[in-house]
Length: 183
Image 1 (cartoon, rainbow, N blue to C red):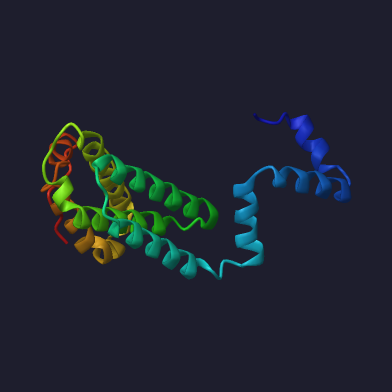
Image 2: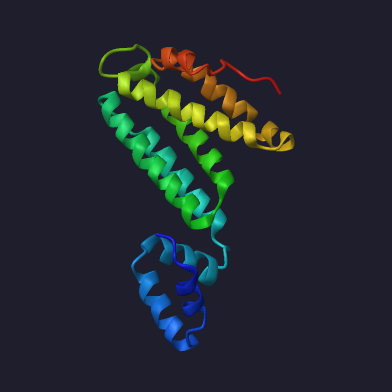
């Protein structure tokens, strides 16, 4: 809801002590904002590397689990995608969105090739999810400056190779996802 200009002016003109009380009450109602402020003001952004490593470890650990069905696999992928989004909301670390999603896709597809090799009605939703996630990663990759793309090119090509060799290949073709990129 947009604030009317008159209310904005009235808030700006409030006594500082009263504004601080209101601000603290409002912040408490937004856990993401509390975590973000803690990261920026208390941690002073010094824990970014640790947070990235913790997320990478979690992705690798979950990718190593042996799942029974593509449905369970997709639940893990969605859960980790939420963790990555949460990390980006807290840290404003946009490059981590690309890195961690790419890491997740490559590890999950490598570790579960046997389950994802053939298309079936059970793997359909997971196949579509993989293709859409790969498309999102490619879009983020294409927005990078040319100098930074080289760092991710081999992982991108591995993701694309796996995407086009597993049950997701039909959806990858429908979304016009290339089979590989050149440096």
